[in-house]
Length: 257
Image 1 (tube, rainbow, N blue to C red):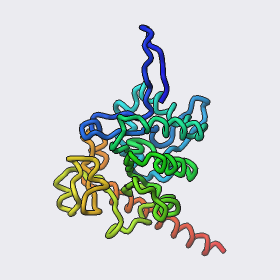
Image 2 (cartoon, rainbow, N blue to C red):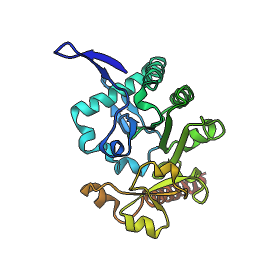
Image 3 (cartoon, rainbow, N blue to C red):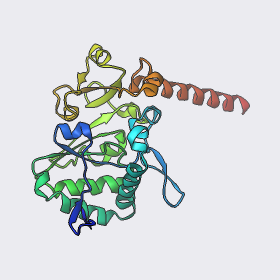
Image 4 (cartoon, rainbow, N blue to C red):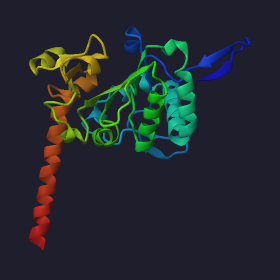
């Protein structure tokens, strides 16, 4: 949280945490980064979502309002803060979370973006432990990172839901581990015996069932691209195609030698 002075001389707070329309409805605040591979101000490129798979081509956070110049600039500022000056990010976020507006509230870490490194994830875990009056949750495709760093050492006020459509889907036990899949519509997720989280995004971590179903955003060109598949089924098909390709390449190498 920082301060700026308006034209009328008033000092206004600039919050690190914001609320999109869906999360505002249920009283949740969110922290946002850009999605997937982006061009930074210095011309370099950075992958904010290292384990993104098919989701990268179907991501709501790469279209619409997320592409507005002012919105994108704000998200890049967030990334520069937490990536390049992590100690300052931790200080500012911890200080902001002490404000009374967050007392007893939920924070969704990333409505866009990911835990792009071990250090960044560990920074958030320290922030959570130093903010006991606030609760945190997330979706993540960083499965191996979470299993190494979070599963056996999670802050008491942190819940998470693995998210299908990434390169590490195969590391999720779909029968026992909480995970979310994106379906073409509500009817499809109900038919698959997943819990519909449309009523509240918090159902991703609070529903009784670990099978969380998300209806796809009603963005016409993304719906057309997804068809009747889910993010999980599309990723499984891609993984199988890659496995077969690698197997053929291995066989060809063996025959050549």
